[in-house]
Structures are given as structure tokens and as C-alpha cells.
Image: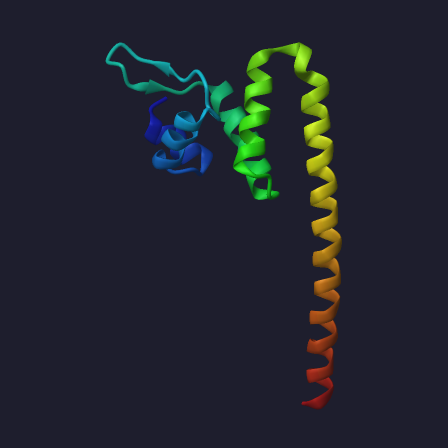
Length: 116
């Protein structure tokens, strides 16, 4: 599929896809006979995973490190697992922080309801 089709299906812009390719997050996008990018379903699955990492707050640097390890092969599985475990703990911590923030908002909303 073209870069425009991949952008539409992934929810990322064509600019973001080119950027991800330039910094090494996307490694081996195929090319058609005219030299245009030709994305495959596997590329979309990888983009979906990258989007989830980004949405959960993983830094671009950590995402690049993960992508680099992935390209290096199966022998890096342990290091990739550790990178994901560390990120999972950051996500859990952020969820706990947001839960506390939500409690404060709920409290304030209820207090204003009592005043009305």
C-alpha cells in the first residue's frame, strides 16, 4: 500500500511515517517498481505497536532502542523484554498518579454540586 494508504490506516501522517523511517523506527519499508514506498500488513502491525508505545509515553529514544534491538534478532529478546517491563512500570505509575488526580477532580466537582 502507498504511504497515503498506510497513513490513513495507521492514523499517522505521511510526514510521521517518513520521520519514523528517517530515525530508524521503521526499517525496511519495501519499494514498488517506481521506487515509492510500499507498505505491507506487517508494517502496519509494527506501526500499531509503535503508536501504543508512544501513546503510553515511551520516549522516541527508547522506541528507537527497541527497534534497533528488534532488528538485531532473537538474541536480544531479553533486553527488549526488560525495556518493556521498565516502560510498563512507568505506565503503571502514571495511571496511579492520574487516578489520584481524578479523585481530586471528583471531590471538587462534588463540592461545587453541594454549593449549587
